[in-house]
Image (cartoon, rainbow, N blue to C red):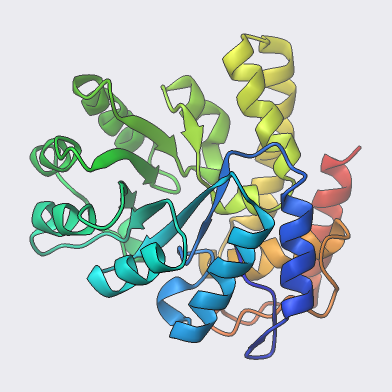
Length: 275
């Protein structure tokens, strides 16, 4: 989930309206403090407010909190999170995941290196997935279908663990490759269309799956484009275009500046997806 900002201040009204809207969507839960939510950049108080607002809005739904170490893991547990999304770590990654799982169940995170991720090799992946406290892995390569295929193949040795797609730019294909859930920044807007896509795959509705995949792909091409770090602001723009948050609650203090023409592109993509 992105966080609606006005300048460098969280817009609490927009946040609450957003959470109330999301509570009406067909979701299993939300992720906070992750890359889309700028978790490592938020202050301790901001993280607490964000998690507590989502917890209050989504009773009975799963709250996954991004964590890059034991401090965030303890904070997440104290604030009511149900699981952790482990930011990638290069040093001693297996020990790191084991330590996080002492606080809450852990979802490992394979993230492309340009976004600060780590290219875990197969041996490391198998060791992480073998940990009893690790319940699955989110895979977000952005544009490496080959890497996703490699990890999907490795997951066959861990049938009790979830393969979770984070592939905004090839969501439909990642489901065809075996992903059984989605945890994606793109899902923070037009959430219902993406939930319908997952349902179409689960129900074997090939015609609906093909149609929805094309709609979602078109939306991703307008939002997950260069500069990639601009996607957080673009998702906030998409929410505003969909009437979920105010037009002026779309600041991303840590993202790049984007031209006004890009906002119009996002607005147009939302209108096209809603036709």
